[in-house]
Length: 262
Image 1: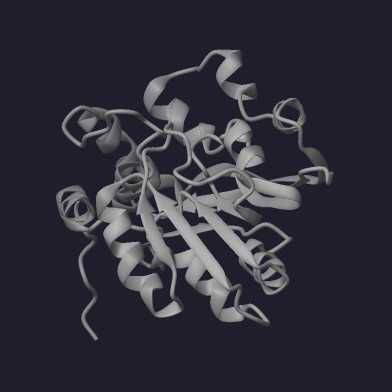
Image 2: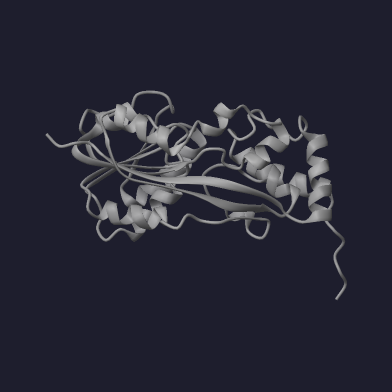
């Protein structure tokens, strides 16, 4: 069979720019990038907790993909499940996906107070919130209620970030440190009952995967565009072509906290 010529920089980048970025479906990366998964299995663990809850809030649900997976695996359905999302395209996607589960999706800006009454939920969950809103989490949890989440840890994928931005201040490297997360949760009145952290290998096999990742996870390289970083992108393309995948390491932490009972 005839061999196919290598795909050019222009082909790979054009394909990545044309790909939609809504939601947290990462299937586009299949065969182009990989990331190891944390040992605790967030969706599976969340499903167990959903099965024992009555009223649940999912904060910053994205496109609803992870909550959909967890609800599908839960041994029983909570009587009430509500999700928030700040980006309207994601909120629309989540609404369509979660409506069959009876989940209401509320569009709420990331830094606004939660639009819910005090002590409204016995379980609050979140996967990769931009910034945990500890006082709001504590406020909407009923006494004895639980916060269960997977957060992005310190210096996540910084090999890639610093390739584009250069060395970052030490403060950026420690901003999401587990000790800081624990202290912030406790300052809001929560008791941290579990806190685990892992660093996980990521591989980018072509420049299209890098471009799509940075367009999708917009806080990695703020203001990223292909035009603004074209020289660095071309250099990285040549590096991947000659040396193999670009390797980085994501940081993930599992956190479970409880609001003390009365």
